[in-house]
Image (cartoon, rainbow, N blue to C red):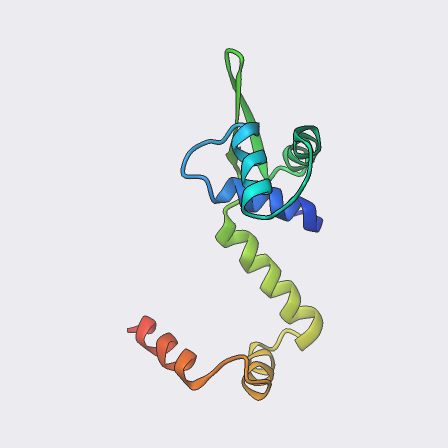
Length: 120
């Protein structure tokens, strides 16, 4: 997977959040309403084109209607992000990563209990 810019991530998140293959207007309204961007539709369209080029999205045409289909799931993208983070900052050690989260108070005992419950 190619790395995304922060703006591309926002547009991609807007696509992932849709329960249907979105059109430009759906994605544009989400970037404005949910993520507070004051981009023009053409700006969102440019980011969408970049995401198609990077193979995160596929552009589908049905008559005059263009919709976008995700080629990379949000789950796969998030996994890539945390693996890259752990590799770079924690020398590929998940234990070191989690230890630093506990020491910093970012992972509480309550969080660990919830994780244990989900394992069952």
